[in-house]
Image 1 (cartoon, rainbow, N blue to C red):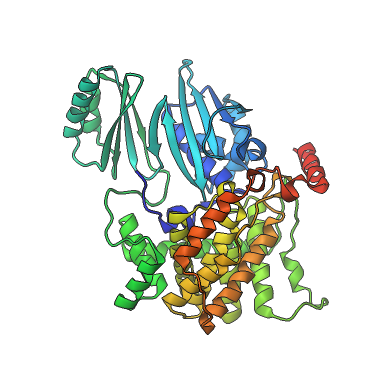
Image 2: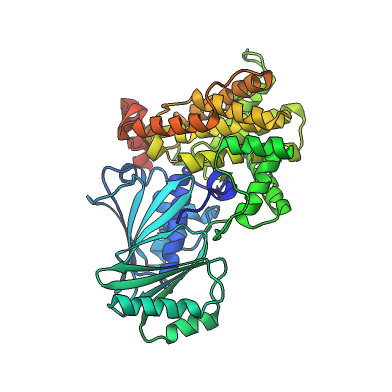
Amino acid sequence: MRQPASIFNDVIGPVMIGPSSSHTAASVRIGRLMHQLIKGKPKKVIFEFEPKGSLATTYHGQGSDIGLIGGLLNYETYDVRIVNSLNEAKNLGIEVEFNVVDYESNHPNTYRTTVVENDGNEIHATFLSTGGGMIEMIELEGFQVSITGGFFETIIFLKSSDRKEAARLHECIVENINEYDFSTLHENSNKFLINIKSQNKLSEGEIFLIEKNTEVDKIINFSPVLPIKSQKTYDDLFNTAIEIEKIAVEQNLDLWEIAINYESSRGNITKAEAYNKMKDIVRILKDSMERGKKGTSYEDRILGHQSNLLENDNKKFIPGNVFNSVVKHITLMMEIKSSMGVIVAAPTAGSCGALPGTIIGIAVELGLDDDEITKAMLAAGIIGVLIAEHSTFAAEVCGCQAECGSGSGMTAAGLVQLMGGSTKQCIDAASMALQNIFGLVCDPVADRVEVPCLGKNIMAGTNAMAAANMAIAGFDSVIPLDETIESFHKVGTMLPSELRCTGYGGLSITKTSKLIHSNLQKNN
C-alpha cells in the first residue's frame, strides 16, 4: 500500500552524512530496521548484492557498507559515527560479510540480508533502496511484505498452518487493538503472518493480549525510521501540476503556501510545524556551508577544497556576481558531502548542491532572509513531490536525470518563488528546466560521487536560473509539467543499465577513472 510522497521524507531530506542518499542514507534506514529485528547485539550479519545491480560495484565507494552497519548500531542518518561503524562493529565482536551473489531481482538497489543471533537463529529479509534515501522491506522470512518505515509495524508470526484458523486468529487479534491503520494477513507455504500498521505503538496491554494467544509463534515490532509518519487517509491532496494550478487560482495561493497545506495534511502536522521544519533545514544548510568555507578534508576523496578559488580577485572571470555565487555555494555543498559532513539530500545526496546552492547563492547576493529561502525551498519541494509520484529520484533507475535533473526542475520553481513569481510561472520554469535535462547519465568516476557530479550539479543550477528567468519573462514552456515528467521518466528507463550508476559505462570506465579507483583502494 503506497503512501503519497512527503516533502520531508521523499524530497528534501534526509539530513544525513555520506556521499549518496540511495546508498548511504537508505542503508542506514535499512540497518535500523534490521536492528529492530532482533533483541540485543547480533552475532553476524550478511549482506548480498546481485551482480547486475548497482550495489555490487558501488556498495563501498558510495557508503552502503558503513551505512548498513551504522544503522545496525542504531545510528541516525546524520550521526558522524557512521564513518567508523565498521570498526565499531568489529570492536563489538559482530562479524560482517558483504557478498556478491547471483539471484533474481527486479530492482537495481536490492539488499538481501541475514541476521544471525547469538543462539544461531537466522532472520532473513530483503530490502530496496527506492531513491533519495527512501526504502522498502519487501520480504521477511519468505513472506512478501511492504514496510517503508513510516508506520509503527507489528509483525505476528502464527503457529497455525490452517488458512481458516489463521483468518479467525487475525480477526480475534485486531478486535483487541484500539487503533490501527491497516491489518493484513500474509501467507507463505501454509505459514501465516499478520502485519499491523498503526500511527502509534501498540500498548503493552495490547501486546500482552496478542502474546497470550497460544497460536502466536513470534512478534516483531518496528518503529518508524522516517521523520514524517504515514497514515491511513489523507485530505485535500493532489497528484498533478494541473491540480496545483487550479488550487492556486481558486484560493489565490503562492506555490510555497500550497506546499505547506499539502505537507500539513500528508504528515498530520500543523502548518507552522511544516514551515518551521523547512526553516530548520535552511539553517542546517547554511551552517554546513559556513563550516565548508573553512576548508574540508577526507582521505577517501578525489577533489580537494575548491570553492574558495572563485574568490581570487587576480583572475579574470566571466562577469556576474550572482552566477559565481551560485557556483561557489553549489561547490561548498558538494565539498561538505564528500568530506562526510552534514548535508540535506535535496532531492538526493548526489544532487545535494544544485537546489540549496543556487537558492542560497542568489539569496546571499540579493540580501534575502531565511524566510524567503524557506518559501523557495518549499516551492521546490512540492515540484519534487510530483516527480516522486510519477518518476523517481534513483539514478540506478533513470540515470542522473533523476537526481541532478530533478534537482534542476525543483530549483527553477524555487527561484521563481524567490523572485516573487506566480505559481504558474514556478510550474512553467520547472517544466522548461526538466525538458533540458533528458538523458543525463550517471557515471561517477572511481565509484565516488564527486566527478562529474560537481559539474552536473552546477549545470543543474545554472539551467534552473535560465528557466526561471524565461518563465518570469513569459516564455512559453510548450509542454505542460505533467507531460514533461511522464516523458522524463520514460527516457530515464530507456537508458542502458551501464549508464545508471553501475560503474560500467561513461566516465566510470575511462583509464583515468580506473587509475584513481586503484589508488583510492590502496589508501583504504
